[in-house]
Length: 482
Image 1 (cartoon, rainbow, N blue to C red):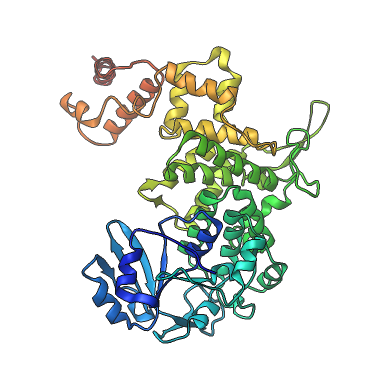
Image 2: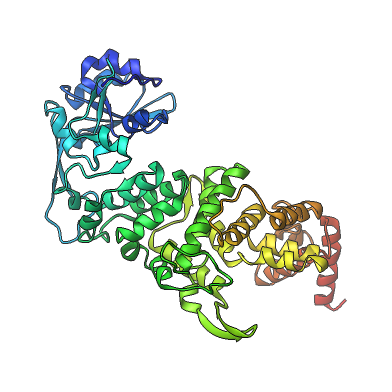
């Protein structure tokens, strides 16, 4: 089989390495599927020592030699980065708990191409394409698996040697829409995942959430592959936590009304809303993480209560519990910022306040600007995200895909706009330097005054700096007894 692929630096590689340069893995798979992107392209070069590769490419861009000892380098040119590798063998180290990097890696320029492909995770990724003529090399049967849309192991005996492959199986199934071969489920039962680095776990989860047509597919695969119970016990407990079947009619294929089922649907709906609003990836990820963890406190707060003539499952305080538990999860996985965006600062308040938007709607006849200010301040100005999370949570009671914002969400966003409440409008108007100019010394006392002034600002007692300074003068006068 021959396949014509074209990316910006293809000819550069051919000119320097002729018939010995290939693209491998995901780019080939996605090219066959018809949706390859010119990013994350893996290049394999045979019959050239790594020093020779570096020497030939250094005049065209930047070389990162961090992985040189493993026969891997990064080559960046005009804003595009390529992972370039020599053929290699991966031999697992003996270890009680194996992590992703516990391998002895031996590169060999003259290692047969098939040997390199044999070490790869899944057959659909074990394909090489020679750049010079488009010849496809598929010794492992990956083309058949792509045609059948199934994920199968390249080497069943080697699968347990790299625990990260369990998460990759879930992500590929979710992103590609492929089914997982039952052999992988059987193999995953014996694989410990606790030795994986948090960075690699985060990468797989984040990509699954952002790149999947339906993230719920990958989340359910993580449950089936035993990754949920090992890595995310807080989420695993939601699979065992039931919800009131009248208030939450959504159920899984076996008829269970679990918090887990609601969570998966909510994540899917959140992703659809993020796309419909054109959110950039950082904000989309914050919304999706908030949707994923917004109800993890329900397992610990579930109670039965007699109301409306029947026994009802209630979860008073689950929003606060969910925020605290999510903070612990973020601590464990060292989640702070992603691509310059503070995930922690955004996600935790969204979870704590995820019912507040609906409360505003329910009290819309007596709604005040003060209430809007308070919610905006409590979510650090991320008004759109909290409204979207509320809408996704509401839509999480139905499998029907949302096509946009419902009446409640549209009304809320319009109301924030109408009353001029935004991330900018809730910034403190009176700052420490203003009080210093009025003779106030820095210290705890100044902090107390600033906080009092900010609360008055949120309560709409003043809306300009000049008005705020007049109120500050009154406060200072009261303190001095004037």
